[in-house]
Length: 77
Image 1 (cartoon, rainbow, N blue to C red):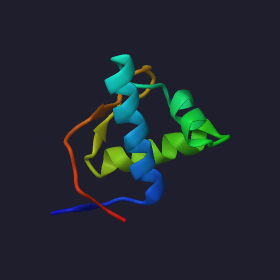
Image 2 (spheres, one colour):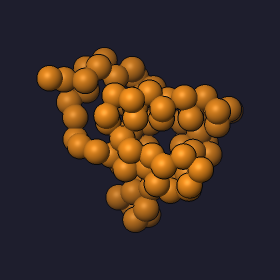
Image 3 (cartoon, rainbow, N blue to C red):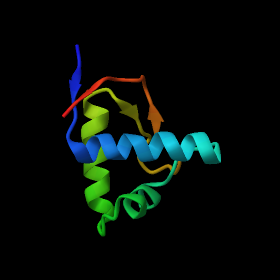
C-alpha cells in the first residue's frame, strides 16, 4: 500500500535522507526548516508529527537528531 504524502512531506523526507547520507546523522528540526525555507520551526514539527503518525519516520521528542526514516516508501502526491 502506497502512503500518500503531500509535496511538503516528501520534501521533508528528502531533506532528512540527504542530510543523513552526506553528514552522517539526521538534521535538527531547525535545520530542516532552514533547508525547506520554512520560517517557523513549529510548522516543521507539525510536518514531522504527521510523518510519524503515518509510520514513515520515528522521532524522539525533546532530543535532537533522533529522526529516523523507518522504510523507503513510494510517494503518491
